Amino acid sequence: MKFIPFLKSLHAVFLLLLGLSAAIPLVAKGGPVDFPSMQLAPQEQGGITYLAGGIGSDESEAIKNARGYNLHMTFSQGLANEYEVGVDVDIQKPGGGSVLSLSKVGPLVYVNLPVGRYVIAVNRDGRIEKRRVMIERKSTRNVNFHWE
Image 1 (cartoon, one colour):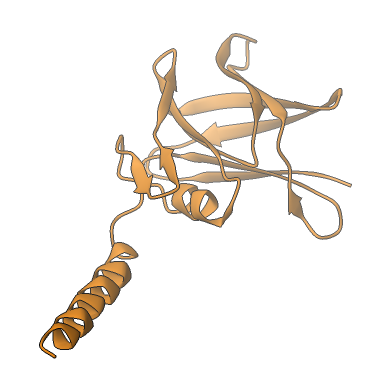
Image 2 (cartoon, one colour):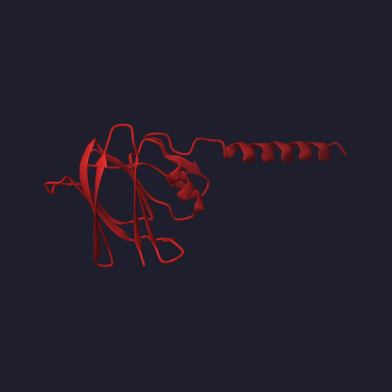
């Protein structure tokens, strides 16, 4: 039968394409990630671009591989460092003016902020934690919030 070699060739092409899909860039600055099961696009609020999510391994890896974000926040809990969702985030200038305010996000939030000093206030179940960060040119700040 001549049909069987065609199916084997088609199967080989499918496997090749499946393997190449892992090599596609995940998030370019301003570009969406397009996995079959999700669409992850940068969001903007008041001129500040950010990514928020990370539920599931595909989305988590997409955000972790994103470029163009100089503040990386991770929210976790417990001894096993399990990802935490449902966190309210408020990024403020030192004088108190809010730059970015997000509700019920996590476990990963990546933000592209202008150079400067900021206070990050996060609220999880009524417990507020604050961190001060300095965003410098051509560097990335990693900030982890962990609850027991």
